[in-house]
Every structure is written in C-alpha cells, then in structure tokens.
Image (tube, rainbow, N blue to C red; front, side, top):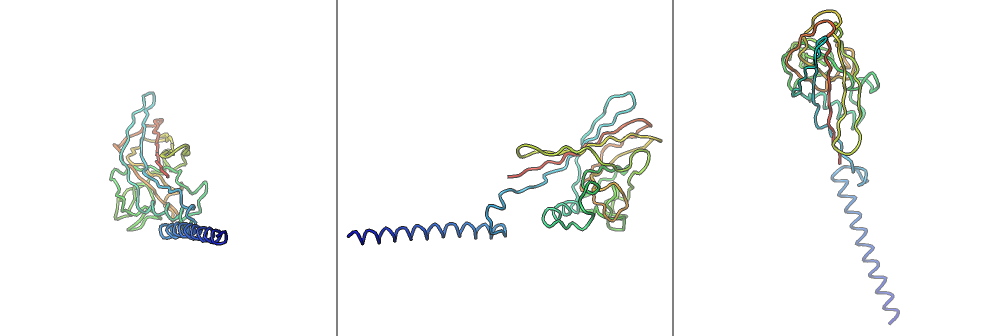
Length: 230
C-alpha cells in the first residue's frame, strides 16, 4: 500500500510539473507571437511620442509679453526618422549627438501651413526639404527659412522628462531681432542648426499669427513634447 501511495504521489507531481511547463511555454510563445521576442519580460515598457505642442511669446522693447499657442503639424517623415532611430539606430541622416538631435529651433516668415504628408527632410528639391517653411520642397510650402537678423536656427534649452507617465519635455529658445525689422510666422523643431543640409530633418512645424519684430524685440519659442509609457 505504501508503494502504491508513493507511486501515485510521483504521478501527481509529474502531472503538475507538466502543466506548469505548458503554462510557461504558452506564455513565452504567446509573447513571441505578440512581440517577436522570446523574452516575455523584455517588452514591458512601450514608449510613444504623443504630441509636440507649440507656444510663442513676443515681447516688444519696453513692453509686456504677448503669447499665443497654435496647433502644429508633426511630419510623417520626421516621425519615421524617430521610429528608425529607436528600432534600429539607422535613421539614414546624421549620427545623433549634441549637434544632431531635435533640440534645434528654426524660424520662417512663411505663413502657409504645412501638412503632415509633406516631406521634411534633406536639401530643397521639387519634392522635399528639411528647412523651416519649405516642407515639401518647391512643390510644397515654397517658403524660406530665416538665417539672418538674429533668427538663424539655434539650439534651445532642454528640460527632460521625469516622474510618472505621462510627462513632457520642453525645448525653449529666445530669439532677439538684431539688425532690421523681421516678420516671423512659423517655427520648426529640427535636428541640426545648418539649413539646406542633406542631413536636416524637421520633426514638427507650427504657423501662427505673424509678428513683426523691431530691433531689440524678442520672441520666445517653446516646443513641448508629451510622452507616455506603460
């Protein structure tokens, strides 16, 4: 009787072990089908850029700030650049560094709003341009990026995300009119200072009610990128 009892206990243990193995295997295979990764714990966190929001505050000499926020366009080509950078580190443009990342702000007097489908990469051609105000090249906005009077593209001050989801990071830059009255009506978040460059990518652009700055006037540009993860 003791012999039979021992054998039955072993049998139940084997069944339990087999069932556990099947559950674990199903979990791993299910994770592989869903994510392409045999490590089901390796895909716990998913990151997504939700939006890039824009605000500008114009301050005339001796005056008070006059601020406005406007809806912006996140370019498809800019989003693809970010996606390739994250998934394969092979975005096809410049190597990400302090001089090649989306912490540069460019300006334009172009009042024509871009569309998400217009190409926003590379030098200006009939179809594509990474310059601010020229998305889609000569067949798109047909504008021009500002490069003088204190409005050349420049790096902004970056505040990184922290804490729980969702969170935001910001890029802030104040431009000062230095030599002549200049009208601004568009801002772009770009990956490098140099315009007309094969490596230039514009992530997002915003048109706003045009402002004509006089010498000494300033305009503060704030780009806010909202992130979420789980």
